[in-house]
Each structure stands twice: as C-alpha cells, then as structure tokens.
Amino acid sequence: MKDCIFCNIISGKVPAEIEKESEKIVVFKDKFPKAPVHLLLVPKKHYRDITEADGDIWEEIRSLAVELAKEKKMTGFRLVHNAGAAAMVQHMHVHFLGEVLMEREL
Image (cartoon, rainbow, N blue to C red; front, side, top):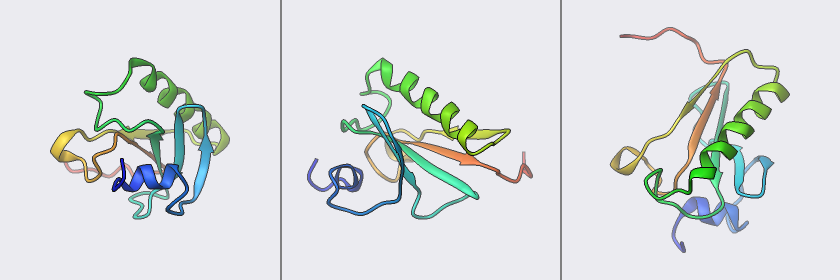
C-alpha cells in the first residue's frame, strides 16, 4: 500500500531500526516506545488487522516473540494487538513490550 508507513518501512523507503526478520514478519523498534523494550512485529504482507490476516501469521508472531524474549533474556513480556479504529496504523502489527513496570490501575 503506497501511503502505509509500515509498508514503506518494509520496502526500505523509510528507515527503521530492524531487530529481526523472518519470511513473513519484520520486527523493528517502536518510534515512540512505551516500555524499555518496545518492538513492533509487522507482517510483510499488508493486512489491515487481525480480521484479514492468514491464520499462520499468529503462529509466526508467537514464535518470534518467544525468540525475542529468549535473546533478550526477559522473564516476561506483553503482546498487544489493536484492531480497526483502535489502531493508529492501519497495517496489522503486534506490540512486544518487555521489562514493563507492572504497576497498573484496575
């Protein structure tokens, strides 16, 4: 998609700090991190959100998240996906957040 920031990162038209890549997913640092480790796991194929994605995308994301946690020697992490109007970028992506302070308001 021509004006999609994530498609432009994947194609190399826009720079990003790429951390890891698989056949179907690119992992790069979030430009506006909300945690000490904040990465985006983004399918190379443009899907608007989970409602359009192939089923094997989730397994690829899960597998990469586990690899990232091991590589970074993390004992815990969060995966967050926002769909539709809840997503700031309309290209499916999953936030990988690590070493998050666990103080929360319920």
